[in-house]
Structures are given as C-alpha cells and as structure tokens.
Amino acid sequence: MIIAIASGKGGVGKTTVSVNAAVLLSFLGRTILVDGDVALPNVHVHLNFNPSVALPEVLKGEVSLEEAIYEMRFKVGKKETTLHVLLSSGPLEKIELDGFPEIVKKLERDYDFVIVDVAAGLNKYALLPLMASEKIYVVVNPERASIEDGKKVTMVASSIGKEVSGVIVNRYRGERDLVELAQKEISENLAGIVRESKLVKKAWEIGKPFVVAFPSSAVSKDVAKLAKNIAGIKTEIKKYGKLKYFLRLA
Image 1 (cartoon, rainbow, N blue to C red):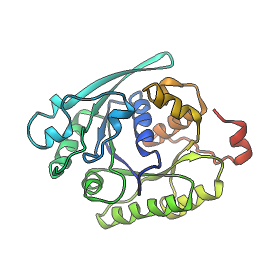
Image 2 (tube, one colour):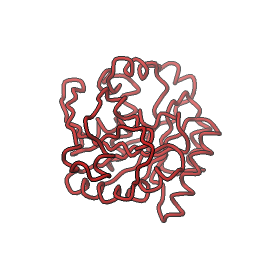
Image 3 (spheres, rainbow, N blue to C red):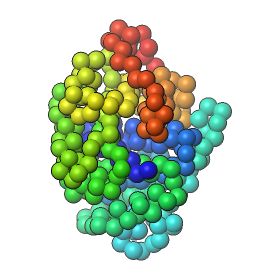
C-alpha cells in the first residue's frame, strides 16, 4: 500500500510524524519510507544518515532502485525492527519526478507499507507523489491557519480524483474544538493525535526518532495508535481537554 503523508505548508511536523510512524509500522509489516521531497529533503536529517546515492540518482537513471535503498535497524524498547529507506539528498536545482509513480509501484510489490513523505505545500513536487498514492493523510497543527492550509490538500486531491483518508493533528495541547474543525474541513477520519512534547526535540538532538529514544513516552504511544490506524487496525483516538493534556505531559 502506498501511503502519502502530506501538509498544506511546512513547519507542522509532517516529516517528524512520517519518520516515527514508519518506524512503528515496520513492526506491523514490511515497510519502506520514501522521501518524496527531492527539492528540500529532510528525512535523512531526522534519521541522522546521509546516503551516498538517493532517489534523485534513481530518477536520473544513474543508479538502480535497489542501490538507493538502505536498511536501518532500530530497537524500540526490547523489540528490534528493520525499516528500509529511499532518501533524497538535495537541494537540487532541477529534477523531474515523472518516474516517481513507477518507482513507488515497484516498491509496492515488495513492501506492505510504502510511506511517502510528500513535499510540503501544493507545488509540482507534491502533486505526483499524491497522484501515485492509494491513501493520503494530511498533517496539521491545532491552529485555524494550519487547518485552512490542510484543507487545500483535500481540494488538490479531489482535483486528481483522490480522497483524503484521514487527518493527523500534531502538536496537540488539548484544543478539542480545533480537532473537530480539522475533521469537518479535511477528513472525518481522525487518524491520529500526536501531543506536543519536549521529548521530540530531545530525540532530534540525539539523532534518533523519538519512538526509539523514548518508546514508553505518551507521545510515542500517540504515534503507535496512529501507525495502527494507518495499517487498518482500528484504534480509538481520544480528544482529551487542556487540563488532562497538562496532567499527561511527557
């Protein structure tokens, strides 16, 4: 299954969500994370790994797809998992994405979950990955402007004959009314709520996904629920209020 993680604008934590969800999805099935933003890639930074060859070289026909796929091992708590990654290494001045749909279709034959971290915004680098995906999830922050930006993704998806599969509210601090607004404007399916947490920054500083660095934290449990929902395992997402949020900070 090809799954796009998208956002109307940058800065909402889309790549953070993509990386951490992909790590936990790898426990539920064979998973590859693809950095679909060839112009301003960021996944390799989150993984603290610089590839010698990457997606742009595959698109230009300089290397085979197999040569650009890397295997990463993670230990989450006491369990180990393998996540495959196809990274981008830009920034690049010019790159054509025409071959991207064919690449992810090939990956779909070998993987249960192909997670595509789509370029933020609605530019040409976002369109083809959206077109190639079977499911589209939109990441927003619990803010009206962010929700309005996310709504634009649904409009673009509709214009290419796609529907948004769910909305992911990131950096949640108890704003239930804004979660409901996101469901109304973007998708009724609330795929996940990922709380605001200082541990996200701490994990970034040590160069690890936070689900690896802090597997028992509340924010990691939020992503575990998200991963299950993406995988089709129904999990209840609770919209707790501000008081409960502050009592559960972690």
